[in-house]
Image (cartoon, rainbow, N blue to C red; front, side, top):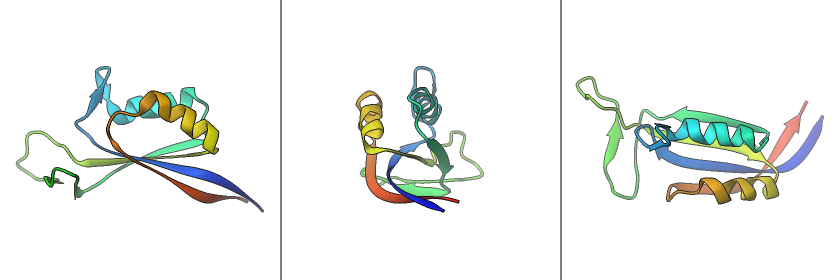
Length: 103
């Protein structure tokens, strides 16, 4: 077993946000892979709200979905910071220390 200190980047967005004609989360995933980052996962929330206070949640009669999306990326601090230079767009972004356990 090996334990390594890394950074966990979280980008909070919504599923209706677009970048370059595609969903923003897809843009982020493709860029993360381009940068050779260690791993990325996208989570779709069932509800949430942000700065504007608007509650986003799934609904049977809603024509357009705007559910919350969280993108998590793990890698070394320098690689994450270089990646952030290109993708920052006013979204809520957090960066925290994590320990990655390789079994």
